[in-house]
Image (cartoon, rainbow, N blue to C red; front, top):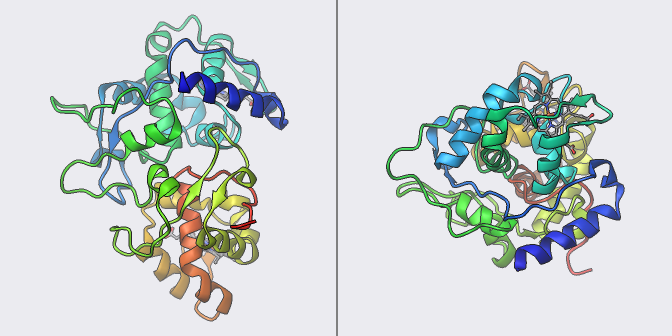
Amino acid sequence: MFKQTSLSLALAGIAATALAVHEPRVEPEGAPPAYAVACPEGAADAGACEVDQLTYDGWKTYKIECQQCHGGGGMGSTFAPNLMTRFNESGVDYGRFLYVMEHGYQGQMGVMPSLAKNPRVQKNKDAVYAYLKARADGAMPNGRPPKPDDTPPQPQGAATNETETAAAATTAPPGTASAAASPAQAADAAPEADNGTGGAPSYSVSCPEGTADAGACTVDQLTYDGWRTFKIECQQCHGGGALGSTFAPNLLVRLNEGGVDYARFLDVMENGFQGQVGVMPSMAKNARVQKNKEAVFAYLKARADGVMPNGRPPKPGS
Ligand code: HEC
Ligand code: HEC
């Protein structure tokens, strides 16, 4: 019931915007398949996580049938797109996914083949969707997840929307911390400096389901200041929304896959570093960055967690 409502809202929103390129889609009969994934905080490899059978099967099928084009972990290649970006920024949802699996399509980047006659894909398409959604939500780093044992984490009910899916995704096994600020927490909780994750600044962001622009979201002052500071001080290198440029990396990937946590972030702001891509300058003498570094981290974390699409968020209280 709720699912139907939110889905048609999402469809109406998408039809009205530039995302029409990602039509057509089918109306799915059931709820989008939900993943259940739990990873230790800061894990940079899926090997450290626990996943359910569906997500594991999705990873395996993806690796055999999709990876040669879409790259390891859905991160894209020179001839097929990053699927996390398609999910998070281009409005690819379960209905669009099912359509593409059935019919394929030709887009600006190239040809996505129909997989209607591929029995492995047909059998496992829900699993592949669950896997890619876990990746797109930032719930699961790249890498090979362990085969589920006898006590996998269970999906919590039928997760039919972002919030519930994220809640299932961040159910941590005993002894581990869940994601720094899950969408579920972020939607309700007031921003606080310490959310039990070692003092990393947390964001508070809530967006309508399926939105592709941060302008539709509500964000707290910290996240807004972070967006603004990023735009002035970081975007010229790291690209809009931290998605990377030819000479500086995608920071969503660095946070999700590269193990950049708050401590590493502070170190880099202070000392800069030279890596394989180039030189990240020290920001120690940049007063605006020093004043707003917690805000920038909160903003980047919201982006990396898949909680906030690209774009300019509204000023809080406006
Ligand atoms: C032969 C290469 C190839 C294979 C194999 C392949 N894809 Fe694609 N796929 C593409 C290309 C190229 C595009 C981008 C088309 C464009 O936008 O121009 C694409 C686009 C997509 C999209 C985005 C749809 C949209 O509306 O933006 C999804 C989702 C997708 N593929 C999923 C998969 C999955 C899942 C598999 C494996 C089951 C898979 N693909 C296998 C080449 C491939
Ligand atoms: C002059 C260009 C430039 C500017 C401005 C810049 N960066 Fe970078 N940054 C880089 C490059 C290049 C790298 C990649 C270095 C490598 O891995 O080779 C990088 C890497 C990083 C990393 C990854 C650290 C890691 O361990 O992988 C973080 C985090 C980062 N930058 C944050 C920021 C933030 C936040 C700002 C703004 C306050 C910023 N950068 C401004 C060029 C820049």
